[in-house]
Every structure is written in C-alpha cells, then in structure tokens.
Length: 165
Image (cartoon, rainbow, N blue to C red; front, side, top):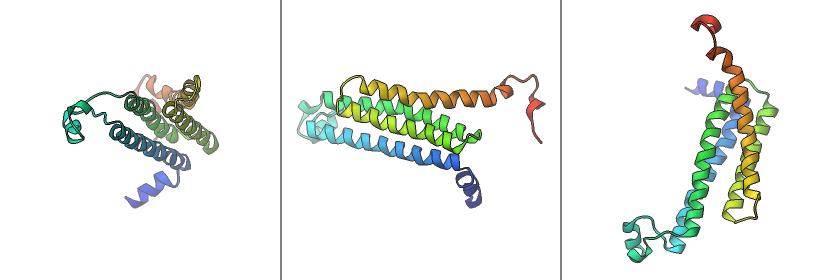
C-alpha cells in the first residue's frame, strides 16, 4: 500500500493539491458542526426532547433562528462541498495543469469560506450570493473539462474502440 499511496499522492501533484483543499473544507464542515452545537447550548434550543430534558427541561425543546442559520450553513456546505469532492478528484485524474487546477481548488475554497462568513456573520446582501456563484464557477469548469475528456468513451460505437493495451 505504501508505494501505491506515493504514486497517487506524490506523483500526481494536482491530486495532492486537491487533497489539501478538500481536507481544509472537510475541517471547515466539522467546525460548523461544532459551532452549531455551541449555539444550541448557548441558546438552550435543542432538537431532541432528551437533550432539552438534560439541559433544563422540555421548554428548551424548540427551534432558534441562530441555530437554524448554522444548520443552513452546514446543509449548504453538504450541497456544494460534496459535489466538489467528486469533481475535484476526477478532474485531478484527467491531467490538468497544476497551476490551473490549483486556481480551481483555491477559488472554490476561498469563496466557500467567504460564503460561510457571510452566512454566519449576516453580511449585507449580495455578499453571500456572490460568494456562492463564484465558488460554482470552478465546479462548472471542472465538470465541463471532465465531460470533454470522457465524452468520446461514452459515445463510442463499441467497447473496444478506446481500449489502450
């Protein structure tokens, strides 16, 4: 396993770059989950009656706008970061230049961070929307490049047309 790890991770610099930004994004998602829990505790707004009972009674089994905001941040991350993880991994395998790939990964990362900041800190519109849209640009670009790279395989007449032995 050691050698195959080195081949994938170290010899494919694009994939290593992708892994770097992906791990940062996953850590960001864990931090949002922790923030959500802390806001729940601070606001005494629990989603489950057993949790409310443990922290003062069933009156704390309720919704809270700040907790809901944190949950929306987390849900939005799942809706956007998970597809990025797939697209970025596949994109890394089609042989893009390191500089272009790094730009894709960095733009997505930075604007997802800005999106989260805009959401949690309630920044003025349209900051959050702009961050969302700009973060989608590299994903769309990667998807188009992936489809272009593999389209001839999906549309070939016979299975053996593109087999390189």
